[in-house]
Length: 155
Image (cartoon, rainbow, N blue to C red; front, side, top):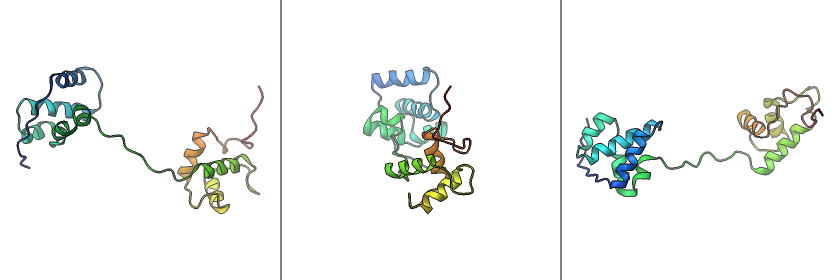
């Protein structure tokens, strides 16, 4: 078991009220509830090792509270996400390719065929099926279901 140095957390009145609201206010992410409980226990004077044993958290929530306040102690920072593998021009070119007729000998486009053709036609240096699938999904294309993607049926 790890030993922790003493961490004194003194919650402000409005922060205690906010933690009460989080804990009594319905469905919350588990991390937020555990961090709230940890802050309450640290505020009550329990040691970090006692809190870690009960709540299964380290002292990060208490340190974050001291450094940056309640919001930072309870909630994670927004993560940037992965970089897009295709830029706007590459996406547009691939969509235009999908709107055209499929290659000779093929009845329709498939996700695998689109990925292969995009690299073969040098529309993108490297592209995988999942990237193509997400691109088509964002444009609501289903070329594997329709022979002609561009045309819509008049009703």
